[in-house]
Length: 140
Image 1 (cartoon, one colour):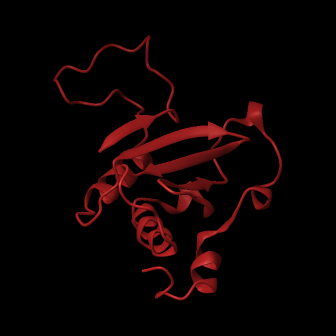
Image 2 (image 1 turned 180 degrees about the vertical axis):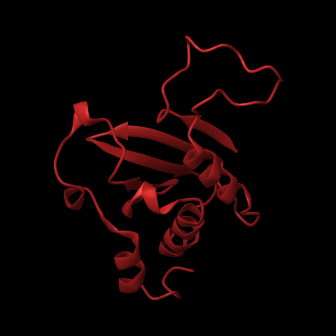
């Protein structure tokens, strides 16, 4: 799975890790935990996960390759995998969009304060509320 992390600053001024495969000091555990949970999905696995910031929020885009269309059941499956990789300090997980080849989620905390936009509720709903509104059998 491709992994793009724009949540953490690029550590240009930090010394390189001593061993190949080690992470730079200060790299975000949340991105690693979420990526690891998504990697456990073996049936129709994601092709990419992209962590980026915008509107004062931390966004998570989970993408899939061509050949299949995403359905509401994917929101439950992917959303629960993301939630499994989060810590309480990461804040509430929101669902924003179900598109043909990807899903968008976001965390309302820890974004870029310089790009603060509207309240999170303008962009999506808490994932738990969405899952309650959609029966588990919806689009499975």
